[in-house]
Image (cartoon, one colour):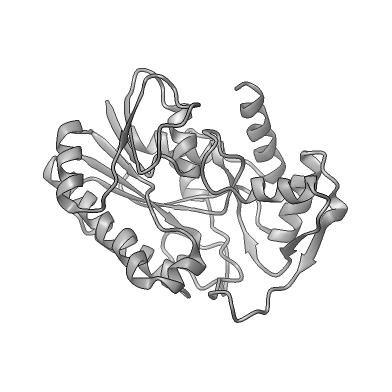
Amino acid sequence: MKILITGGSGFVAGSILRQVPNRVVAYALSRQEKPDALPEYVHWVRILSNDAETWADCIHDIKPDVIIHTSAMADIDECEKQPRLAWEINVDLTQTVLSLAEEIRCRFIYCSTDTVFDGVKGMYTEKDEPAPLNHYAKTKVVAEKNVLQSKTSGVVARLSLVMGFPVLGVGNSFLARMQKRIEERKPVPMPEDEYRTPIDVITAGRALLELAQNTFEGIIHLAGNERSSRYNMAKIIAREMNWDDALIQPNVITTDLRAPRPKDASLSNALAKSILKTPFFDIADGIKLVKEFLEKG
């Protein structure tokens, strides 16, 4: 099997690439230089343009059996400031890659987000209708619909808040930022009125790899077993990491300078647990898995 992962320098992509079995031929596409921690059997391809022809040439050369599309403009506030760029990356580029997957009859796994919901009720299932509150989420909903209507084998994998450290040394990790503040003895304000079902980055990578190798089609929620406020989550993480949890401070964000977010974007992972062999964890056990993975190198 040949798998292509877009957004190779991203946080979730890094977990996938570090866990790809060596029997699988894996390619990573990224704008960035090849990271030092990349396994030797993963092929790294730099692609510096969003031009459709450039992507077409690259994908036609590789001819993957599966594409895991993690590439995205994922900063919610930056998407609000640059809506056109966000649309070009999150919708137009996704459609380009999706069309190429259709052309070569390649399975397509699209990484979406828990923030496609409005956060009114929480514990959303795959049957609940999205109701995006910000531009980032709107772009993801449009891309989701395109994947579900495509002519190839397609999966929309909605990831809940992903916790862990960048296993390739790159990618956007809130835990790495949290660690830096704690090491500097600075307070870490965390919202006590925003609820999620966080999933550790190792489990997220394993679940996506399993989806690449099975026949499931449609929407699936990749989330942890525990619904928690972000404040409570941070307290649990601090205790598991042996950090001073007194530095974790409750906070309620009221500023208008931030794009709107759902208050309760928690997801039910019942479907994922019923069809995947990958085990899912609560917050504490997820952090233990992250620590164990990093300690093993």
